Image 1 (tube, rainbow, N blue to C red):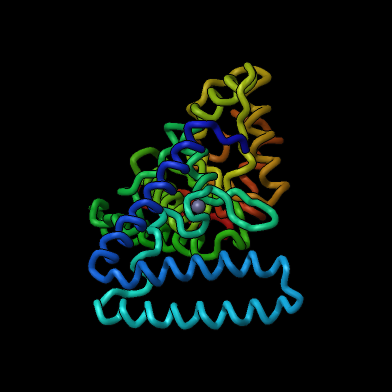
Image 2 (cartoon, rainbow, N blue to C red):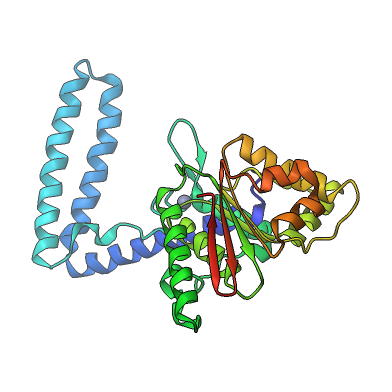
Length: 311
Ligand SMILES: [Zn+2]
């Protein structure tokens, strides 16, 4: 995935911020206990000297050993001083937003891999509308909004189902989800909770409406690059509200869903359409991808009835 300059700079900024905050803390502690600064100075000197000595030394191991011994002594002394002042050793460690990549956006020493945090950042930038809401979470899922006891009970079942989907992710028996039913029954909210939970677990999620998906496809046909394969979970909300453009809509929906299924990548779809309507609107070929009980958990929500189909 391409990383635009503004994102590179954003990462540099936050990494720099974490580093300079840690530097400030260090300076404050040095004022309190100046010996610590001397020790740090000495330590740096020892390591520098070791580098110089290693170039000429015949017995390189001895040089390393000698230095390591001295460094260890200094470290012990500094740990003791810190303890006397009630400071823990990790106090100076830079507080990166992402400890995984230390705010560089990449992990791995030899082979650089893009960190999940950067993938997520790029996705949310690419699709402003795909922002995953902090508020829409299983924790904030208020079942009491469902007035009828039966409905409440059924939504609790679906919620539990979705939570265990997240629990098993990405090793789900069925990679895909199809949530069907009238609007106002909480389909979008349910999928937002899934998005939030998986994002918190470090997966990349792209959530967009079917309408946005088709718009994005249209834009990308005019040049800009879009990548529907990279998110770990792709959520297509409101399938059936997108503009039906001949030779575009069905074909691209098929391409996106089919390609992801072939690569065993998870896709979750919410729609107000009934199975027979899906079949009519999208045709047999695409319908068989969307409504695929073998790999899709198909859940139908109705007013006071939630059916788990072919679980
Ligand atoms: Zn990261």
